[in-house]
Image (tube, rainbow over all chains, first blue to last red; front, side, top):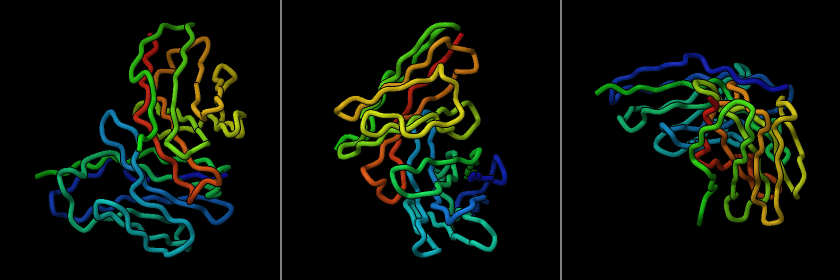
Length: 115
Length: 114
C-alpha cells in the first residue's frame, strides 16, 4: 500500500521568501506523485505532477518539485512567495497513472504568507 | 468547457437521515471518483465508477453507495447518517485510460450532520 507524509501541518513565510513544503512517500512500486492546492471553500487544483519523466517538475504559479527516489521525497518549492500563495497544499501518490489509479493524500500543509 | 460540477454545495441533515450528492464530470471524462475530506484532513478515497460499475472502493462502510449513469454523471448516497459523516465530499473525474493520472476535482458538497 502507498502512503504520504507531509512534514509540518503549518508553514509560515514572509512575502518574497522561499517556500518549501515537504512530502515523503511510501510505495512498493514506482509512484506517480502530485501536488494539489486548495483555497478556502474550494476544491483541489493540480499544481504539478511527476509521472516518471523528468525528476524536476515545473508547475503552475511558479511552483516546482523534485522527485528524489533515494530519499522517497517530492518536496514542493517556490523561490519567492506571494500573498496569493496562501492556501492548503496536499501531496498525493498514485500507484498507477491509468484510470484504475486512486490518489492517496497527505494530511495537508497550510501555507501562511506574511507581508 | 465546463469542469466538474457538484450539487448541492451545502446541506444540513440530522442523524439517521439519508443524503444524495450529485456530480457531473468534466467534458470528455468517463471515470468518476468520490472523496471525503473531514475538517483538517486530506481527502480520503471512497470509491470509483467506470462504465456504470464500482471499480474500486476505499475503506468505507456499506452505508456509502453510489451510482453512475450512462452520461457518466454520478451520485453518492449515504444512509443512516452519523455525526462523523460531516465533511466536504469531493467528486473527481478522469478520462478513459487515466491520462497521466491526475484527477480533476469539483468544488465539493459540504455536508453537516446534526
